[in-house]
Amino acid sequence: MGSRPFLIKSTVTALLAAVWFSAPLAAQTSGGEREADLLRQLSEAETPDAAHLIEGELKGLWSRSGSAAIDLLFQRGQDALAAGQPDIAIEHFTAAIDHDPDFAAAYVGRASAYYLTSHAGPAIDDLRQALVLNPSDWEALQGFATILEEVDRPADALEVWRRVHDLNPQNPEAAAAVTRLQTQLEGEAL
Image (cartoon, rainbow, N blue to C red; front, side, top):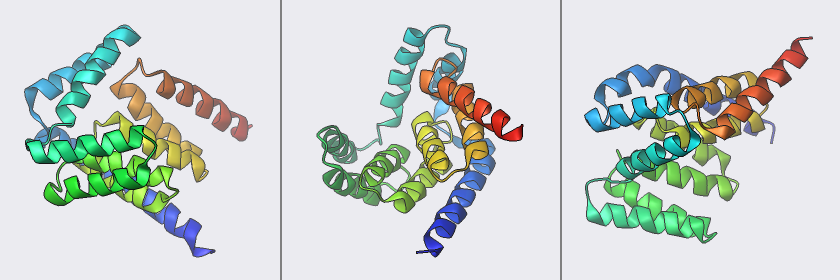
């Protein structure tokens, strides 16, 4: 029992390193001019509605693997999550990953399903891989930040939430988390 918190903290530390050090490389190799343009627009969006539209377009780009069969598996995983069936979602996302290990969105989906089934370790592993493949995926970053808060790593969580906020300043969850964690950490410093 005593080794589980150490294992989770070690895994979280490795995930932090992967996120911090993979961003420059992934930015050089990631999905094209349209994605870069949308990410720029998202960081400059002036209203939540404008940001929401851009988020939808980015999610649409990221949810396409290039294979109709893999996209169907991914959609079935999303549908299972929406229906409250995370165990079934895990099966569909795993099948998509088996067919395309570079499909970052499938890792994010499976991480969500693992998290819902109280499997934090596999969720962290999938978030790590998703962020190696796509360091701009704010949903993966948000999942990671949430887990960091749960394992009592508020300073690290704040850093990840700030990254989400940098990607999407209109994200209300990121803005609230940054404010909450800054206040918490300032209070601890007193």
